[in-house]
Image (cartoon, rainbow, N blue to C red):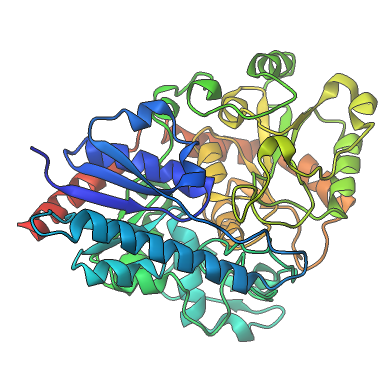
Length: 496
């Protein structure tokens, strides 16, 4: 007999699906039945091993989206439609599964904090909720602290301390300067809404306003965060103190194979469904094996964000001029704005619109560069000894994957919580540099070249990154195991 059923409700996007699946497996290992509520368009990314787990169930919600929003349209209206569809479908699922006499409701629902409308739905059915951050604690803590400290009036040359947080996390004018940019239409972005709405000058949320995720957090009986004490304990404690409920770091919620492969190569094809690519894993390994230890700069911006079409040629020129070995991953549609492919009727990957591609660069750099178009085995690349640096947007999944393998960062945040993730790695953990001090302007070729040379030539920062990575070498963090056990006991007491 199980300890009860826990529903896990995720936000739209692959970056949210993967940690939610791992969380379900951890809950199932503690004798809960874990039910993952997932939009149908994301369900294909779930491997068969997850679907076949005896204590895990995946309930698909079918959503009929309007046609893709036209360029230049208001993203708010399309995202609002998206939320309305999800809310209606979620309530229908709840009604059909637990609204009948004799049915047993879940002991709690774990809600992605980017789903503020979901709290009220579960409240109707008297199901207690737990707020879940698929991103890290630092981003949420800094966002909340920036709201409390009223950072909108920070002036050039001023440093604004954030009470309750480490001194090195004080915010400066350069921390807060962001280039106004329209987000992909129909996409809401990470906690705080930094990826959605009108262009904003400051941070992931509008200064002077409460971060939107607080709606979920303040209605919750507890918080769970996709992180661990080893890298973010001060920020976990801050959130618990500010919101007034227990908060646990229960991650990083990476695949089990990641934790079992410490000190060895991770074969992505054994973990993640392979996508289209112009290189196989074996070809990538062969190329990496031919390069000196710690010599390769890995450049990747994830699946949904990246530089602008004007910045991509500058990056190409910088990689050519740097004379260092590099792997550069380019996604379909690179440099062009638009919704994630799977959302609002986006085209499948095989039909995705072409974006920027540095035609001719491969012939000019020869075997010094490897330009991957489409899917790349990121875990393999980060775990290979030839990889010595990571030019990254600092999305949370990529950030913890690299931290755990001791790879230092050249941080180029694009939107939302990525700015605060970048500050975590550069100011708190001190395992990276920012690509530019003024991210309100387009990044220049010279800044990229100087950043790569600075990072790849800094032996001290490589040592610090290796030291932080060693904390992950013994498998899934012990503090997160203890936190998951504490959560289990907490929920059992609540349900008693």
